[in-house]
Length: 73
Image (cartoon, rainbow, N blue to C red; front, side, top):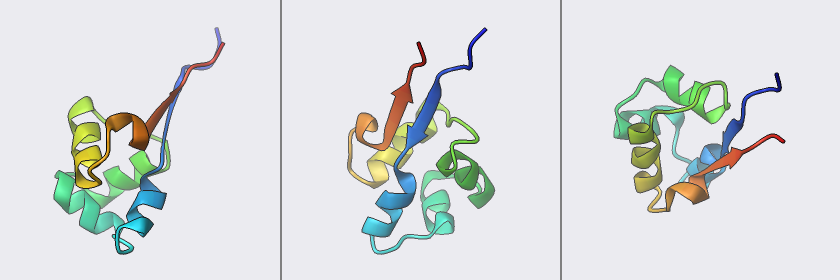
C-alpha cells in the first residue's frame, strides 16, 4: 500500500500577509487551541471540514486557495 494522500496548506504565509497574525490569534478566531493550529499548519494533522472553512473565511479566500489535496499515484 502507498502512502495516504496529503493535505498541504499555505496558512503560515497567509498569517504573515495578514499583519503577521500569530498562531494564537488565528486559533482564537477559529475556535481551536494554538497547538491544534500548529499541527494543522505543519501538515501533521488535517483539519475537519468545518475548521478548514473557518480558516479560509478568516483570510476571505476559497478553501482551495488555503488547502491543497496532493493525491499520490
